[in-house]
Length: 450
Image (tube, rainbow, N blue to C red):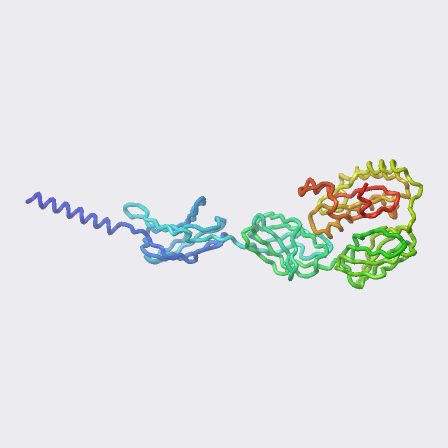
């Protein structure tokens, strides 16, 4: 009997102990909602988690993503068995979906009871912020480098200038840091006005500085003419390129006291015009091209147009063809930096050698300068840039005693590359001015043959 009593007592104690353990055991938490369920990668976000069976002393919360360190909850507050609040520091954390892990830890067993809510929280990238730009304005006959400051700029961000239906893209863009971008933009011939500056990160998010940049109408300028010669037995229509053209612009050819006004003209845009000259009976020779607009501004292309006497060859003391070819073979091209038209320091030695060759030519012959550009940038811009490069070489020759009326400029822009290709090595060969000697005034296309 005594043995039976002891057995019943032991069984009772075991059952009671099991019941206590069951009572004290920690339950698996239940999660029904997290609000908000997303945040930006630049903020600390506070969230509310709702569900059931949250333990007041052992609740633990974190965000987890494969391949990334866990984001532990901070400022965790137990509100009730059904609600807790906490914060997550999302700054510089990986964007995308994260799992929400909520767990209770047993008081005595120390075992975790875990609830995983997969893809319950999303970290989103922060949109770029633009706070300032320098300069804030520029003329539409220039190339400008914008310094854009702000925040959240990502590597690969793209810059655009937007005004109504006009969208301008930079020649190149460099993200210096998350707070600074440099963007080089060719404004030549663009429509004046106020432009929004937009920065778009690779993730598609955009930031805008409304009317952050102003494009002003630049002063009158003249950069190119095509064709640049004609005979004196009729009329010729030429195309002019420049800036700030207007419908009231006056256009003329001028040689000393001789002036040939345009018979009629069509202003296609602020940077292009079609002009007709009546050259019948005009004196042969080299003429300046001059224009002036309604503002009273004047621009000139010195010695840019030649009038040739019809049916007559302009050859004075001809040089044997073999000698001419030999001189041309000794002339070297002058090369330029990207988007530049000033002569590089390393090109002066070639220029000095060219001077020695040009001094041997027939003084009545023509020196033809063919300006070129690489393929980057708008065609009109490259035509103007190549003309400026040729003009720089012309100024050098004139400063060394050569007759400006015998120096002819042809601007080819990106056409006729010296080296085919779409890399810096090829482009470096194509940013150039070719120099050649001609006994008679050549056409633009003929000038390419030497």
